[in-house]
Image (cartoon, one colour):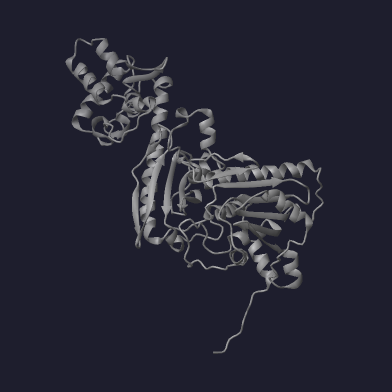
Length: 492
């Protein structure tokens, strides 16, 4: 067999790995993945400003590594995506530690301890580029690094420290220790990282917590995109979607409207990208969030304000990585072709439920502040109590109260209208109890039944009696609940 060995140039490979498009928060999350995989109970992320010598470190109390394991962990692509992994392993390609680190720093040092035995290895990209070889240093070659490692590690008996030095954007620049603007930028990145980790590892942080994550000494609180413990969230029954021998779990949520949330809850639920940017699918793999707030490129599904309350959790098995096209950065996915029509179906009815919830809330508000002709009932909250009153300004109610010669047809129509238009939606939303079996007035949307047309005719006649023109009376009727959702002479 004739062949050539075409080994990649180390400097070129480093440049490629450094240009994968990691953000700082995503890169730190990749390091935390390794800590979680090592079954760490405590994970600390440190950002320390020191001008050009600023550094970032991730420390955990996981099981640590032996020296051969450390060398393997520091080797680029030491394991392929098909390699067998433990149930806690959140990696896939074997390049996460290196690519994430090289995207953010020029010097990566990993120190690990198991059973009291410490092992250290360093990638210094300046050394790699100079010698054009993958020279993994057994000694950091710098007393500053050694001093930092000792300070960070303290008296650890098991665990790992990952230290980034010569940070991109800060090293080899004109930045100085007293550069307040750049220092503020550095710590703003720390805050962004904190919010990102709270979202990505929320399931690990929720009680009972599987681990504790601190950023700059402060404990992270999980960010739940679904407000799953809020009494007003609508949980649509989840579906298992078959994918080969595995299944994908899809659970839609319709979040409460702003009126059901406190100011703090509303601001928190908006997330880092705001309400518009956070709508859509949330894809998890082994409880680690891969993608947050995206419609997965499904045709016809765009971000629109009316769908802001729609968020859908998707749990994919780790074995389905390849089918979902999870990238190295764990920042994008492409759903399998066989599941796209199911995901589109679920997305569309979740979006419609979210739009309807927002619209119904608007109707509840309009009962108190809108046109008094629209609703047969008025609903409001007064001193903590829900107050329900018949709207005496409704044309049919007003006609019955004015007697109009004791017309029994008007009275019968009024009674049927009241029976069919009990404000269940308003009561449900004010009472914070959700149900999927609310009665639909006159059978729900669609062509109006003869009885409905008769009652609408009585309302129409009452409007004419009260001085409305035929065109105006039909316009009022077509915007009046429940005729606004049905087809009849008033909107034909």
